[in-house]
Amino acid sequence: MRILVTGASGLLGLNLALEAAHEHTVFGATNKAPLKSDAFSVLQADLLEPGACQRLLDAAQPDWVIHCAALANIDACEKDPEQARKLNNEVPAKLAEHVARGGARMLHVSTDAVFDGEQGNYTELDTPNPLSVYASTKLEGERGILNANSDAVVARVNLFGWSMTGKRSLAEFFFYNLQSGKRMNGFTDVYFCPLLANDLARVFLKMLSLELSGLYHVVSSECLTKFDFGQRIAQRFDLDGTLISPLSVYESGLTAARSPRLTLNTNKLTNAMGEKPPSVDSGLDKFYDQFKCGYPDMIKGFGNQ
Ligand SMILES: NC(=O)c1ccc[n+]([C@@H]2O[C@H](COP(=O)([O-])OP(=O)(O)OC[C@H]3O[C@@H](n4cnc5c(N)ncnc54)[C@H](OP(=O)(O)O)[C@@H]3O)[C@@H](O)[C@H]2O)c1
Image 1 (tube, rainbow, N blue to C red):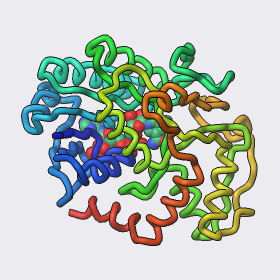
Image 2 (image 1 turned 135 degrees about the horizontal axis):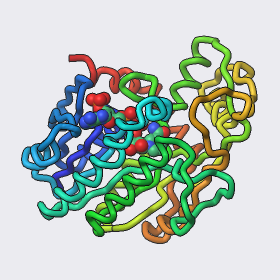
Image 3 (image 1 turned 60 degrees about the vertical axis):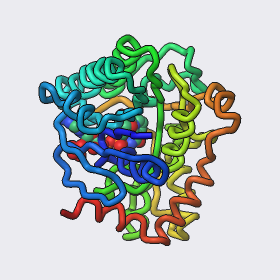
Image 4 (image 1 turned 90 degrees about the vertical axis):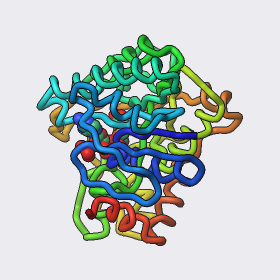
């Protein structure tokens, strides 16, 4: 298959493009970030520019488009809600229209943060209640996609992994601070179910091969607090977990509201795939093995032009 991955310089997009390139012809689209790769073809486009979606599709001629590009920084969305609305809401709907017209299929990446986190164990039938600009623009994006293209897949995710900047995932935050002996906080009252980006990529590829459509929760089969996640990273890398201080998110002074219990039910995905998505521990084992094999430096190298 020919697969176009937008946001290919991002945490998810780059790991996904590399995973997909083992079996498919991949086109990775970036905006401002320099990106070079022998594993996939790099395309450049600012998706906010008129005609950019069609130009990308013309260049890649994809069977599938996996749309990872977004304004994914929660605080940046609070600072610039108009930019968040354009990137997280308008662009996905426009892209979905073009993709449907051209006869390709689309998988759109959304977020667990569409829920307010009061209830937990959310299914695809539960009603979202976004608390931040990021979450509400992502929810509008989901609706725009499914209105424009009823064949599309919308995947609500949470992930960790190694990124080109070394700063995009919570796992990198814990690891690099622990490695340099710095103290940091870990929230004891924010639950999530993160998947390793590479595991998430493989689940996506399986979803494409099964020709799924509609809304899916694509997170780990295991959920934990952010504090516990930091502790598991410390254990896995044999670093000093006492550097992570337990803290309540309500005492943290963060700009945008965070949902406390972002635990998503993955039964729909498990039934469709015939297997559960991977656990946090198996993802952390691979995250550690990747570190041992020089994967973080390899990933950073994609940005060195
Ligand atoms: N990271 C998480 O924990 C998490 C959790 C839940 C959901 N998600 C969702 O997963 C997806 C991927 O997130 P991520 O963490 O990988 O994001 P990321 O690392 O911030 O990457 C964002 C990507 O979007 C691209 N982009 C931004 N503005 C663009 C524009 N105007 N035109 C074209 N491309 C543009 C960026 O390209 P440049 O770098 O070239 O600007 C970059 O490649 C997003 O939809 C996000 O909402 C992420």
